[in-house]
Length: 313
Image (cartoon, rainbow, N blue to C red; front, side, top):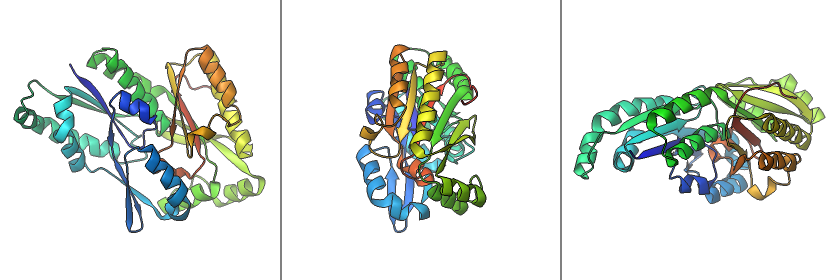
């Protein structure tokens, strides 16, 4: 059985990993006034977006995921021909309509795939499972990477399904935003109140940065640290401690809202990388997607893995 993995463009994984494991990408359209950028996880295009458009147009941008019909068309055009079983991994349904659209599309795909395969001389059944990662950005990456690795190793579809259902309940993700002004004003435009006026005023005056937890579809601040670099260091040191304690995946994902050559210079990264090497954990580092950047601003650092949620210290 040919098993494939598809993820939406918010899924933060290295470009090389996506290509090596042939992970398909569902694009997200970013509307910037009269311009439209299709986010397909192209690293060069993403860096240009960070450099040329995010600061000037990001606050007014809005993102539009593939509709159910667009997802149906993409699957019937090639994916149902290349694979017999596909896991479609999406950002948490609490933050985007991608999961809902993909679920709607799945019914039409399963009704229509036989004709598409017959026209190309492809025999046999096709199956599709849409998986809500209950995470986002590099957290979605953790789940998609697990699915891709298991598929490559020859694990059957039922075993992969069971593993993903278990893992998505235990993806721990943290992020440190660099620009509270950007996040607060993006939140106002979207009707969110996660960073209130008083909290923002205090945080800006004292340069306080939050460490934000994403777990089981919900986000909340778990620490407030004076200074961006100090907050990143605290987050990375916590993750290093979790690795030493023992995590539930053989990889963790890091994404950064900017050039990747800056990640290794972030405070606390050396300790995290050393712990990962010692315990045989692969670090998958990627540029944070343009779609994510529209909501988090530049310079955001995120990290995620599969495992038990422990108190942040």
